[in-house]
Image 1 (cartoon, rainbow, N blue to C red):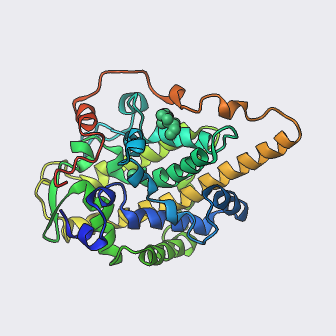
Image 2: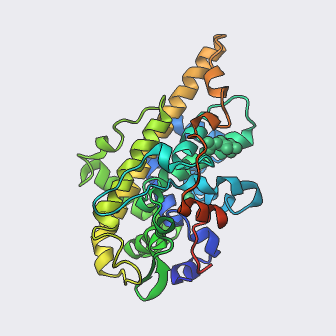
Image 3: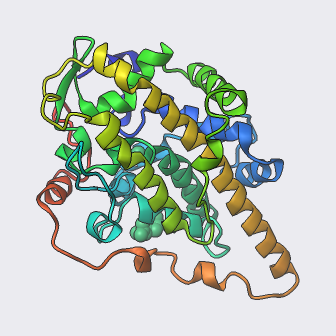
Length: 337
Ligand SMILES: *[C@@H]1O[C@H](CO)[C@@H](O)[C@H](O)[C@H]1NC(C)=O
Ligand SMILES: [Zn+2]
């Protein structure tokens, strides 16, 4: 068990997955800064939350939900198991890496469709939006786009003397070391710094590349682009010398110093993209509403496959690592739990 969790006062299960609370809330707060007013109204209405933190308030919901019996089915939606050999070869192949039980790319496409549905219950539409807010964060964490050792959960490391693993360090220890806290106001401080970089600093010239290829009519293709982008960092930054040497390594300060800028970049990118993605969904939803009000049958294509089944690759035998994920209930596999 690592100390950051004790400090957070969270259960291990809530804290150990995905970007931790700090990362997810920061992604949400960056997005909050950039969404259009109409998008804000649309999202606040679905979420039933008119507070200024309406996105951040639900940013980690999906990590709790996956541990409810009702939400267990969604556990594989937090990642895609790319099969890499860093530093020489990293890539995401949808048919190879997404399983028939789902993956983050299929989930983003599925919930982008479902959030626009007019036939689902309010709760299901609300859940769809919560999933989108969460998964657009997760997908930017390189180890959520990686199968090796359960996305690094099985690579034991120490961070500043505390026992943890590589995946959890990326999710939690590294962001918390950088920011010096983990509260919502720490997330807001971090978001403010990132927003400044996006508006006028080091991210200004690259932000358009973060959303290039973003196409609301091809959610799966868009999400594949984001997964591929994050997965490339497995080769260049997460394991630039391969996996060897990481097991039992102390990550602070040398490894930390080599990766922390990438962590900030990915959080900023996730937030900026989330804003543009929500803008695109809200715009599409409102144009459909106008056409519907005019009597057109416009929702058909959205309602066609609310199960997302047609998105999934054909059933194929699971790889060894996928069998292990399934055996442990698609949890992160952190054996300290
Ligand atoms: C789409 O979402 C529904 C509701 O959460 C779920 O039952 C279904 O399995 C999802 N499909 C995919 C491909 O993720
Ligand atoms: Zn997650």
